[in-house]
Image (cartoon, rainbow, N blue to C red; front, side):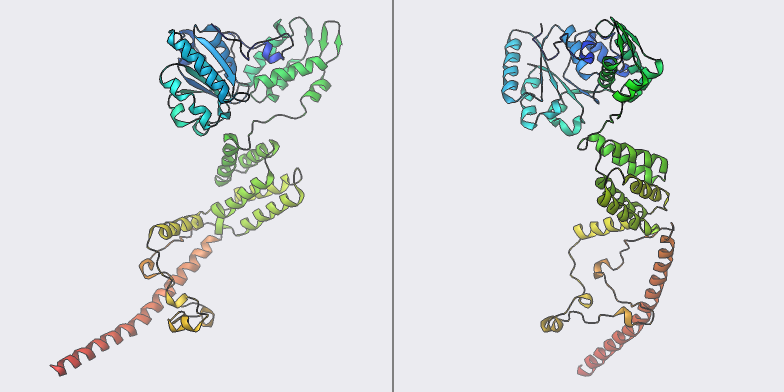
Length: 464
């Protein structure tokens, strides 16, 4: 038993809707879920559907699977879109489900784009899922871990649908040309290479591929029942490839992570590829430039101090001239950073210092390095014993700048990479100098303390 649904098809429906598979045997792709003996196929064929989430990119069959379940199940099948529905519609559906439950009937509720529901709307399903009034099937292009409430997600099995291969899409395109629901009544002349080009252009999206084919056929020269697709027609209909991307979604973070890790792994080819993927999909070049600037300090650091200068220059270039001209500046920065020597010593140093700053007792600043702009501060010994390094012959002093409890802490541990190797040598020289001079300074002080001790003992003896 099935309610009227958003799946209703009409003669004027788009090609993708007319060719929507009605059975599992017609379904193309997702063999990891729907192959013989696979769990999801068994659940559908035995009508043992449980609450589940279909997660995958657009055009891979999420809604189609729900439609196939609707055709096979003996349960009441209700569906609505999260785009056009609100709490009122949810309550109405839940009331229907409760009624069916009282009469011993199962109810499957399909929610397309479930990630568009807010927390309160998602929570409305929870009690009905828990008591078994409904079996929930949700479809989403977003990561359920981020977009679906934890309590609801824990009660649903997540099935991950993958982008279709070019071979899968080619199969769908040839079916569209032969099936009477598609262009089977026409004689469409189109080269194999053109079909393959459409399959590649679709980027794993069956809906996009069928829409492109429909546009190509409808705009191609026609003679009675014969349509001849020309390269010119195909070029006009495929001028710009649609890349899977969402500036606020998971793919946004996946791609910037891929760019960052490719540069860190000193792989300029991979880095440039991921850069192009982001920019051609519409990413803000200033966002990329900011991340590149962060990388220059975090992953290259003092191994190549010029890296940060180049990254900042690339950011400024993006700000001045924008897309598409700034692509070359970002490419220059990305390749330079990929090939630069790497060191994260500065980042490690900061996080170690941060750990002490947040978890250790907030030590007072040593008096010697405090500012003393007023008379009172000077009377309180602010700035007393301060050593001005520029007055020293070697521009070094043995003054301790860390609080006493942290005097032995080492945060910055330079590597041997690139220019940082020189900084490491310099730091070792400084530490050796300070160790030597602090030892020389300490000896007279220890002698004075020893003399003071003897003096006190002599006075005590005389009194006795």
